[in-house]
Amino acid sequence: MSKPLGPKQIVITNIVSLNTGDAAILWGMFQILRARYGDDTRFVVFDKSAEAAAKYYPWACFRQSLFGNPPRSRLARKLQARGYGHWNGRVRYMALSLAARLLRWKLGLLARLFVNRDDYESVAEYVHADLVVSTGGTYLTENYGLWTNIRDYRLTLAAGSPLVFFTQTLGPFTQPKYREAFTDIFQKASAICLRDERSRQHVLELGIHADKIALAKDAAFVIDAEQRVPPTGALRIAVSVRTMHFFNDGDRSLGDQYKASVAAMVTRAVREYGAEVVFLSTCQGIAEYWTDDTKLADEIVSTLPEDVAQNVTIDRQFRQPMDIVSAYQDFHLVIATRMHAAILSLVAGTPVLGIAYEFKLEELFHQLGMDEARLSTKEMNAEGSQETLGHMLDNLEYWRDKVFAGRAECNRQAASVMDKLPDV
Image (cartoon, rainbow, N blue to C red; front, side, top):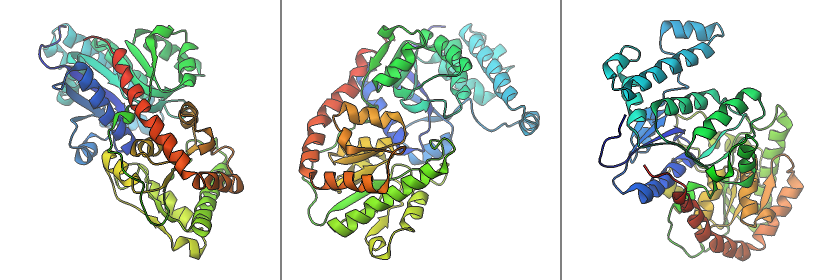
């Protein structure tokens, strides 16, 4: 089916915009894709929480994701309740992909027999798209369920639209069912843009040709922020935390060790450096999202000695990505567990101590020559965390200079994916 003339139409899928880190990626993607395909490029963003996302991010056009939603029909709910919910996804994929093929063959009236009106309009977006882009970030790992994503990619291929994976961290793919699925999908994709060498190896292990892969920095690095002078007055430290629910391998002691280590760093910062500490993360203030980092902040603050807690605040406000950058510019240091808390701190020009719960942050800090400014949730303890924090606080000017020196290069590398994007 020929694509309509006029502005390019791009579909963006697999995003969870209620995570403001993902919203930062989306903002950066818009800038990069407009630079590549024109300022008049039209975007449709498929999100699992489209209605809520539209409320918080009015600068984007959202539609409800086609896969991964709660079952709507009575039969589907019964299958779900009896443990056969996987058939709902399979049958839904078959109906949507059939509708997509019929639309390609200009048999739209026939396609309407297999899907409802909303689904028909959504499938039409895929079919008419000049490009379908699977968002950047970290979601193609076996810590999460992958069939929702796989069905979305297969629908894109059935729709006949070029598929691009935007700059992300992914893998490894160890289960045969996932290896087979992603080998086929990656072979048919137009481009695979990755944030790190380890992800590249995970794709190469599937037999994908290296020419299809591009390494670049996260899309959020293209966010532009004015350079500010360092804040004056008492030392101010922002802290981003997150639950370890998906990353403790069933060992609750890792989460307890993580919380104790953060509490130890806060205690040293307040008692030895006279710091004012504010818990301020990229996932907060959105009631519709499944998690809020302020809840974990509450747990940590409740364990602090009284003299320390008096100098600690929990910021609960929702902010747009640019507003988070602006907020982090008012701090001397950010302790960041969230990947995009670290990235937006770097964009802000503020030194950051990263806490890696996945290899993605380890890879980023290694690329930036900042291994000494990183901890790992698998190895961190109170004493070692306090030592790393002290090293950074005693050398803040060095780390500030390092951040400023690398920020422009990160911006350039993030935008470099334009050279890999297909002509459409």
